[in-house]
Image (cartoon, rainbow, N blue to C red):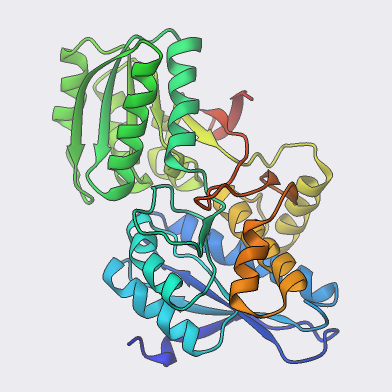
Length: 363
């Protein structure tokens, strides 16, 4: 079992709250090909907890975040859930990675502990009834991007490049299905493993197949390398990717090569809604920059859990039922509800990177 010394408090309760603290577990890696996203989980969660505590906590009890730092080793995820359950947490935020959430899901069911992931997109084959997500599901991402490439850009021949991990494979397959349903042809599918550095054959393959667009399902580390090499090879085609590329890691690491990339988004910091404007203002004040999608999804997850705890108390099964029964919760990622699989029911926006910024092109 995970040594308890690795569990670190991530947020102190506000002095204005009273009563015994309610502890929320947070499972987040220091880096997993997505260091910016990993940090964003903690920042979004800390901001939500601090605001909840400043407003009197949950039924007068402060909310405390207890972090366990995962090493991006999926086999350890059940141990993290078990260790947090032994410490009496009321629910868990995380993990961030798809494989880790798949591994953690049976443990969440076994301990009757609600788990909300702010990052995982893939379906959970044995998810049970205790796992939810504020992240965009793979099928939602794929449908939005496929519709844009085929119906708006007129791409009829599309090459697919994807990571061989759970995320890349699931998103790629979902995209292929969505593209074919709209009359497009998938000219070929090329996969790679995490840590890949040379994408020459992937780029040349798309050119040889006379593809009219390329869809990339990857995390930012490999995605940025692919973008750089594609642009260096004069691959002058529309490029699109999955939601994992909707992060500053992509624009930072790929530089100018990221410009023109289409990616799906479930959160836009420029949205004029009061709840979004308040979140963005508070986040900027606390961290000195605008929040990204993962921060928003972590922020929403903590607020959802606080809402459920106010309604249900600390009984784990009642907390689960309260989350599942949520309807039109005013989240910063849009009015939020969950379907019977724990997936969020909310809109997806397609964005295009321009000048290092994600700009909405379709609502």
